Picture 1 (tube, rainbow, N blue to C red):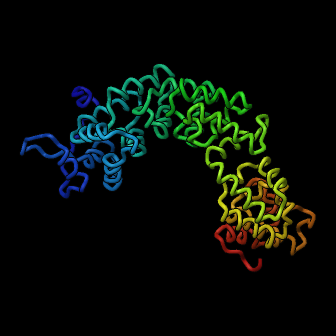
Picture 2 (cartoon, one colour):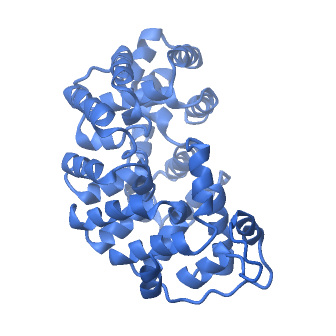
Picture 3 (cartoon, rainbow, N blue to C red):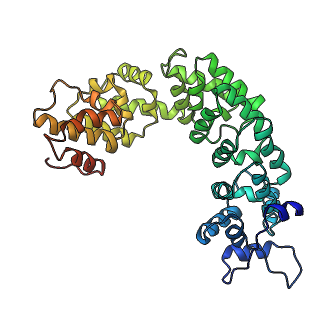
Length: 394
């Protein structure tokens, strides 16, 4: 360890003239009995070794001391605290990161993203880190991007078999990286007893690998028995296993209890004034509406009926309307629609659904950019509506 420090981190660290609270906490943790030795300051260390700005170093050091997960045991917390009372453990961690090709700037970015790495055990993370390169064949940029979103898995589990499994499932490391950014818990579950059985069941239900990657973060961590219950509850929502949105029904079942599902159905029946069979049909088309809060649903339904002038039957037949953001999609696009209708630039038979269901860039090209000469203030009105203010006129 001393050799690594001399070889890779020959930087001098000076004591801070005005020590921060982090500095004093490190002093209290130190086991040194030497009165003449300067107490170790993690904050100063990060400035000298990683090139962090003082403010950023202070914030990162604070997280390194306080960021321990509640799930971690007290014994581990005490042990990992002692790893921050000198430069020894941080030096070893930084040396390992450097050994796989990361630059000083890369290392700084990784430590800022996950300060708990500094208090991890080099004996644990060392072999796993090297295996990313030597066993998986990841390049230095790939290792860097993995660590930015998944470094916690280095000290929480044997990460390489999990990476091998998901890379094979999803088709590439890049696709796994996208999935990890959406769900940073995807690598945490027990691979053999939990992850593989759950994924096998979902695949039997017709859920694709890409859809599995989009599931709620908790789903893959449930016990196989709980997963079977979720599949049955998803089917009871009226979504068959063969449906391309079955994965959404599974996510809804994972997020919402049976009691809340029943209450949400009653609310939709009341708010829309439709028969329960019609609402059930809407849920089978778009189960995600059950995940929207009652207050949010109420505001959307009132807006669509009172402001846009839609009939409840229209909404029930197009339930995805209730999944769109009221402030960022429904209201701004309705504003544009009113302006274009008033100026005779939009076919009155054009449905509101067609305006809100298209993508943002497509909407801008079709309904704003092509009218920039005839309606000069339209783009500004649209932008203003995005800020929550509906302009009176254009």
